Length: 411
Image (tube, rainbow, N blue to C red; front, side):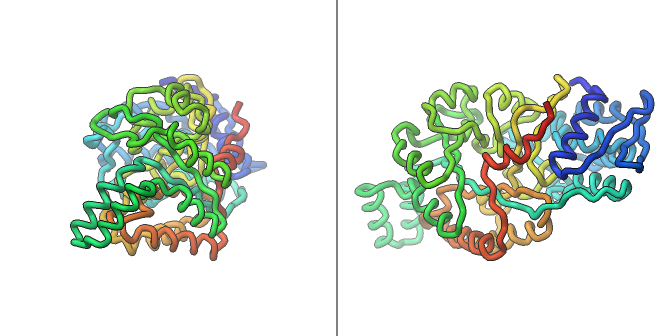
């Protein structure tokens, strides 16, 4: 990794302007010192790229002592801190991974998912320089990952049998066999969203090929679901790529899709590793990714609330795509955290209220959570969220609008 002070400074300046419409200038004093300038105000700091390099390369498992060094960096060199944490350099040398080879956050790291530490450092800077950047009401980006279409027959069937509800089981089998799969429900999902004034995004898998670490990919053939995808587009929704866990490139998967998917992505199972994923996205021509979140816990993975363009440290410039981090996933509450079904919507709404400005919250609700007893109660929780969004007038934004708003003029 290359750490070029001038390139990092220019990236920082454009990032602040793109995110907050605020103008901060980084003025190099000498090789060891710099100042952040706003109008007639300035604050001087010591360059600590040596510490940033250490933190990005030092093996760790999320120990408190490791993050205390990040806190030290935030005080001595806020530009390096903001650029480093924004771009998840703390993950580059992380040594704790789960059985699917996803980063396994430790207890202290999970506690930080409720904090916007990057924002806090920036706000402190703004205040000390008497800069009042534009604040905006937090928005939502709603989406649905399509992992399974045909699994409803078996999974919901077994759920009915487990409940000893033979009447419901018989009706379920009849619907699945003679009508259509219960999880081929994009029309139902869109009708519900439209009723509350929302348009949404569907992320589709394009391969049945077995994935790495035993992660299952699609149980459907995307090309055979053309009618469903066409219907999504006709109703104002967006069809995007759900990058599989199979060993295939973005170019291959988009080609397999036959041109029906837009160049927006979310990694299936949130299975990716940094910084490698950012280079894969760039090479694949992806315009927006929405994967930067933990499966294990909701909230902020990189301590920041808005979409951003990641920084390519090797080339000293921003990548071309926008990262819109993922904050809320139904499976996180249900599988990983064990949050009672009836508390799911309230948990999301309370988190939003605690961060109701300068965030774009990405919400993922799988199509499987809309139908059948296996995920009973989650449809009602989603309706609670839609009702709240409508009543509170919360802005809803789609991938195209995110790219337009947060791509910025880095080049």
